[in-house]
Length: 540
Ligand code: NOJ
Image 1: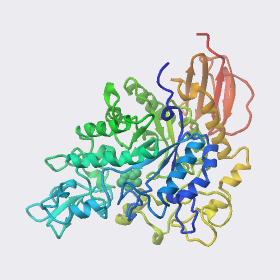
Image 2 (image 1 turned 60 degrees about the vertical axis):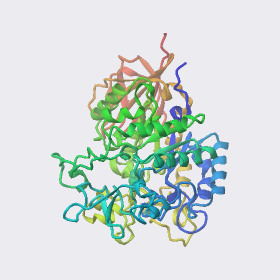
Image 3 (image 1 turned 90 degrees about the vertical axis):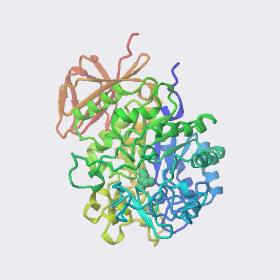
Image 4 (image 1 turned 120 degrees about the vertical axis):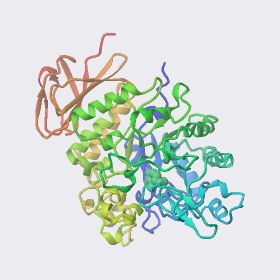
């Protein structure tokens, strides 16, 4: 039997952005007891694991991705006791819990950095990346921050620059120093000992930098929009040495049973797949595959993408797919509500672990944030491209019901980001009652996936559908076979798929209406419709 039966292979990962899921104490920010109160809902989505964006103490300059203590919980979210209870409740429902781990940088308020910046001869000086000014007094080289401006900030007190690729209050740790690696491994053990099942590792591909601090070359294909893209990041990203570091992290996980890590990596496939760790498979269990987020929404392009990724996966490497997260504009806004159903059917019927972003299951859309309420640093730092780089629109409170504040916080509370205007009609309570809603569709789809080995661990093969806006593929396991047919367009299509089989039974339509058994020589697809069909069992 192949080893494709582990929880992080067969299960669905559901990402919760804790600030926005459920406020239990009236401060307008979500918290751990709030999440605990919603776990039955999470389970109703047939999720196998919950990933929490950071819950650590933090000055919140980057909303928790600036960590001031790796081994504690921010009082905004609760206490370690709340955390332990949440973990037990997650486990009690047969689910796993994945924490965000943010090793590349800390907050400038982390005690390590406070020590490091105290003097040039402080024992922790080399825990961070400090450099002398350039001869003209400017930054040591041309490296840039993702959030606008240089990747260097001058520290008056000690007369050197420190490096940061995000906000200035996120100094980067120096993983060429063994004590820093040891400290990271200790932080991991702190949570693993408590029973945490795994980590989503923030910007894992950025953790090593060029030891010579060379200037990065210009990017000849830059479109002139986002300054960070004006350079080719060959000295700040994807350095060969990062693999050794990841292996040291993996060793920690492997000392425990059934733990995993999924690495955040925005890289082309050829580079992405190296993060599995070669034949030994001793790096990330899953390097996040974000291709669908950036895909042109076109059946042929998506087919090429899926086939290409399947073809390049190393032997033994397990695939994964993502449609949205807290850094990307909402799926339903990117491709429209009708296609959001088609995309969800794709995500949840492809081979590999799906990661779902909270709220996508009810079709939440981007929320336009009035300028005076904008919170996100890349948007505040770069107002001219705020609409592209700002992430507040996809981080708004979960829409539970039609009560004031959408059931996210009690009435009268000022929520940290505004609740979407459409919450009265688009919410969990309303969709719960509607058998054709996005939520009902999501539950039916996830239930079907989880009950069907062909759809979780089965093989994948794309088939020619004979229409340029349709993507079709077969999933099979042992003798069981399923056909998925996705109409990426707004036109009805009649397809001849008789080469696959003569007859099939439609088990799910994105429309959530019954479809009679159908001859595959004349399969009718309605506009924006996706179908999952059960094929007759094969004989072998
Ligand atoms: C990636 C995280 O997903 C993003 O939200 C954060 O701002 C940066 N890393 C910095 O930690």
